[in-house]
Image (tube, rainbow, N blue to C red):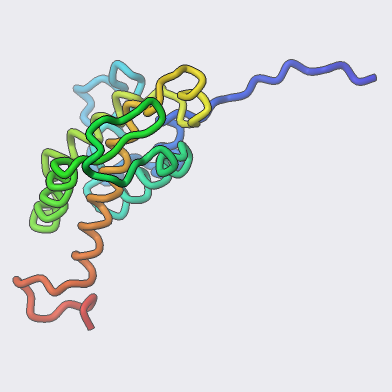
Length: 181
């Protein structure tokens, strides 16, 4: 009979998942600041500490995190449910206004800066860099919803709104765009 091997299972973490989605960092052309430590206190390496500037990158990363964690299964779509429970969370009308405003602002900013809301939401994810992504961990630890779920879903919403209007609706500053033909 074959002897059983002691298998070590690596739990997927936020950090591993973000690095899988963006293997070269969030902004690959960004110069790494040698005066800064190579990783923050949570172990997040410098190339991933700053939020992606390109909306589809945020959508891809935050969407993949939401998929891996099963976040939508814990999301209560009722915006007036002000009392999130142990196994669910909601985005209040105020959360939704902030997301819409951030998306609108993002469409108007140059590709070298980000609205503060996006920076704060990305920092919420980075603070949770070493945390497991799988929902089973959070359920077993009685930590649902996980602290980063709301931030990740909000980033998906903001990036979706920014991309949708960026590529479909005519921008008032331009008469013609290759995306609008």
